[in-house]
Image (tube, rainbow, N blue to C red):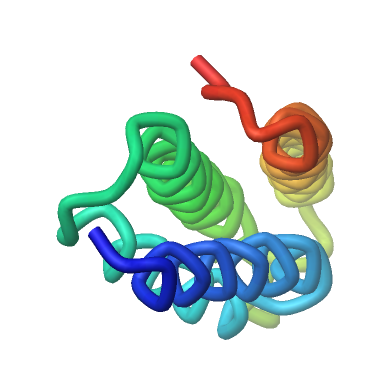
Length: 124
């Protein structure tokens, strides 16, 4: 494996972690982080950088699944006539809690993975 390939994989992982951090604000960058990490995971890379790529992919997948599940709880808000009912407020609060959990999961995964990445160690 050449030095150029290793540098390219590290550059892609740095971009994946940058996009993973920006995914805390928008989901579009989460998809970019997943794509960058999948490029590293597909190649024959060093073990520690391959585990970093798999960590980013796993974390982004978990974030998107929990965020979509949290977003489903906001669906009664689309019906204007239901807005007066108290259960709609309760369901919306549950949606906010699930979205907060998704955000905290991604923040925790980013911090844990990025600090291990700076040390050139496997994250699992």
